[in-house]
Structures are given as structure tokens and as C-alpha cells.
Length: 126
Image 1 (spheres, rainbow, N blue to C red):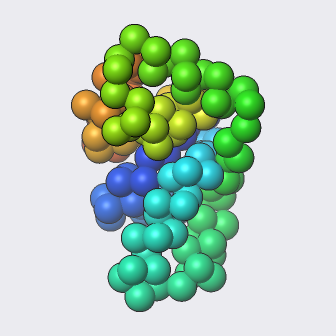
Image 2: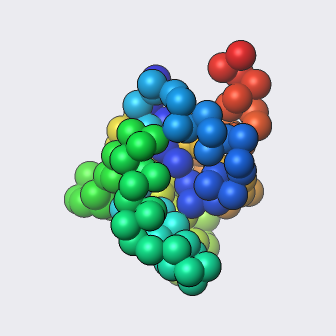
């Protein structure tokens, strides 16, 4: 099973430990990488520290391209909130294009797709 990570999952220490030890296919959309890197650098961490963690957890950064953009737009068309939530649509579009499970602590931002929290995911994998 492929999993896509939203930026906010890295705030969960238990889930981060799971990420470091799991052999599952783990992906981070480039949009979420940008957000994660920004937040970590604001806290005084370095790009190298962020990239080392991602490498140790075997998390691959997924680029945002035409296929992902089309999925994001198709998801946003009926919701009238694209300008406020464009990054979330991009993250969700990436998950849809990879046919992956999206893990997020902000399920309400992804009400248009099937997303789960880190806690829910860990409970399912027991």
C-alpha cells in the first residue's frame, strides 16, 4: 500500500517513529515538502536535517505535474473553495494520481476524498 503524507503528520512523534521503521511505500508531495521545509527552517532546523530525516524514513518526494494538477482541478470543481485550499487540492491530487492513501490531521480539508489521521492509520495497521 502506498501512503501520501500531509505536512501536519510530522507533528506526531509516535507516527514519525513509525515512519522511520516502516517498510511501506511513503510519499511526500512536493507541495507538502515545501510546507514542511518552511516550518522546520522557521524552527531553526536546516534543509539538510529535513532531507536526512526523509531519507532515513525512506520517504520519496513526489513532483507536482500535469497529471496531479488535473486530479486536483477535478476534485475542486464542485467545492468553490479552490483559492483558499489550492495547496490541499494539490496534495490530494497527488494522492489520487498515485492511488495512495492520504494521511493527514486535517481531514476536514480533504472532505472530498478518503483521508485518515495518523492515529487511525496506525490503528488499522496493528
